[in-house]
Image (cartoon, rainbow, N blue to C red; front, side):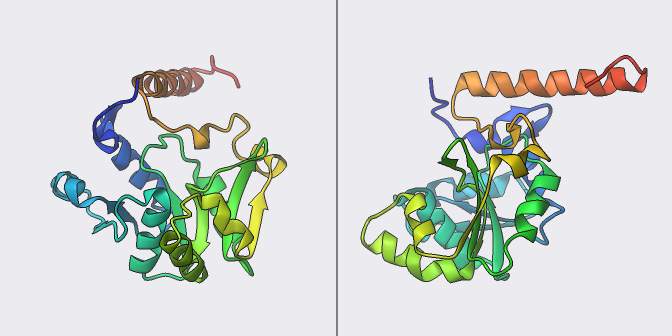
Length: 201
């Protein structure tokens, strides 16, 4: 069963999903920008996130429209794009992805042949091809990567930072939310136990 409500504000361990995401992004990012819909703008703003919030320039065009809006609104040439519903972002992995953007327009992880475009870095060089795709109603983000210089981060590289691929866990359903809370509780229990030298990896 899907959540059927604004999942960005669902709470896990006394934090909303979006607060947790922002916390994981600072560092490695210089600033954080949140793209939302016009309908949700006031709700997100009321959460007092202390980040820049912008309204999607292409409502109804899915994540591709959100990426276009974010790149257009950003002050920097290279920008990390993540979903607000990913509670286990890994700072070291994010830094590694950012560091690999040199000479590319996009850097995107690939796991078992599946791309992770909402855990990737994009340059403003992607704006023109994304605009073209939106105008033609071609909204699959994967279509962009054959149009720009793309670097894929493979599983061997990912394994150095996140062997379980939890970085790509996202919350779409009540079951996902329950699982995320369980995983966080387990992590906290392990960290607490480790202080007493009784927890091992």
